[in-house]
Length: 114
Ligand SMILES: [Zn+2]
Image (cartoon, rainbow, N blue to C red; front, side):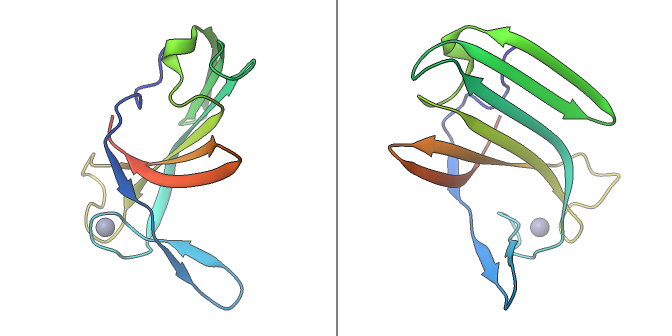
């Protein structure tokens, strides 16, 4: 199993800061009405090493061991996929995927395109 998000096409992730929380903004329209549709966790055994990818969507979970080239970046990352209620509501199949990536001691957030 290979992560579909290996492409390195990025867009900056923006948050709307409220008093008690931050709301993620849609990368296309800027609204905060995003709904989760799938999640993927990519865990490396060690930096630049092979690892495990677990994907969850529609009540199903798949997990597989993968070679190092099937995980983006040099460490671990999470991919959360959303649809936007404002600019691409169902039945549109347009979605947006946020990557949360460990890189050089930081946790970075940005949008990626498969
Ligand atoms: Zn939107």
